[in-house]
Image (cartoon, rainbow, N blue to C red; front, side, top):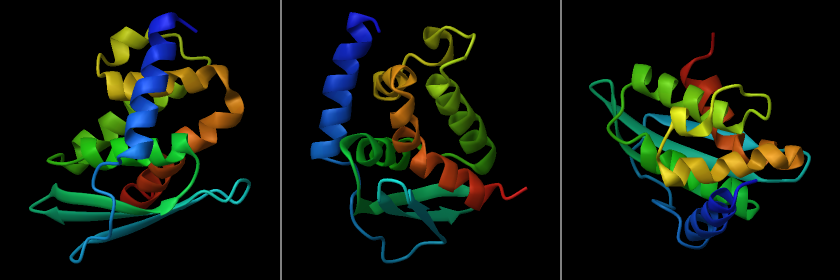
Length: 145
């Protein structure tokens, strides 16, 4: 793991774990997505409000390790304003960042430091399920096919 990736991991993961983006339950939402990892007990509810095919609000509640909480926070932040097609591309790119066998250089996938920080999970396979927990639950809900 590069020094830059280590630093991003430390700063971005801790930032979102300690001060998550939009933590709390939305009063009005169109989608409630439940993310649960029975192995470790991490559990989050992601509340999304989609109006005119765009995410206008997103928040979450729940608990888990620093990685799963930070990852859910980043997800809630980055889907705002996106439509389903944009979310599909965004999530696919994020999952590429996590893929330990991914042939594409990380910098070709994204330059966003909040997202790049999770690429460190590539070196810790047991942490991949923490990093992708809410993301896979979102895919299952919004793209059930």
